[in-house]
Length: 356
View 1: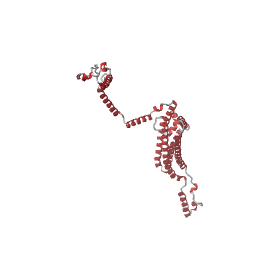
View 2 (view 1 turned 135 degrees about the vertical axis):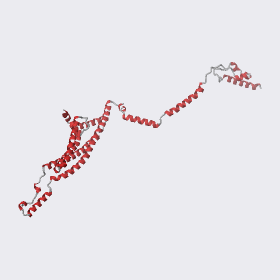
View 3 (view 1 turned 90 degrees about the vertical axis):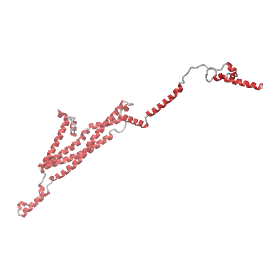
View 4 (view 1 turned 45 degrees about the vertical axis):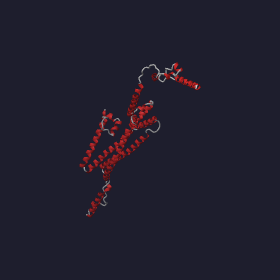
């Protein structure tokens, strides 16, 4: 028994020493005393009150447990912030609409074109934009004028042709005159009046010739028809010229090369008086209308003067009204009654002579 108890006591002593060497869970700075390291058995003999209370520990300052109370509040605050952020965050469709609006604004803005470019590039960029505005207005105006000339000249040519055909009978002898002359000669022969009948058959057409007024009337009428057809031909050419300018004004190459080529084409329009040439086609049509009124009034005057007064009065009123509008445009450039002939006269500097 003594041998068995010896090793047991030694092992118990070692276990007590190991427990004594471990730090206290309540206070890491306070360790076991030397007596507790050497002898652990008396702990079992201590009264139960001491065993329950344990060894006296040094007093520590009371630290408020802030973490236990703050942690739930922080968690709730974080959750609330997340909910608010999710509500304030825009949807994908809203972002797409905003980006589309921004792109639309940037397309019409010149800020993007100014950044990252030198002065030369900006100049040709601005030149192209201004040239596009000018050319679009230029082409729209002249193409519209050419369309009007084509439509009006076609209708007017048809009307004037019908009147010219009706007046053409005055340029040739009337067949009824020859028939009447032969019948008259036969009557004289039947009555035995051979002196009045004559020895040769009657032929009034051999001695017939158109009168001078008839020649003038027909000349004016055919001049009117020729001018209307010439105006229609010029309108067709004008549309071709405008189409050529529109398709070949820029060509290919860099922005600077295209701008220079367009300026060269535009300088050609100014040098060759393209504006005056194209404006002359409506002027031809207006002169054609005036000549047709004169020819029609003169023809009706030879047939029935009372009816001719209506045509003559209408023609004179139209001529005076047109002349007054042209004079007003030459005197005041701000006059709204601009006409092609006033534009041509202003190019020839006739307005300055009238004002002076």
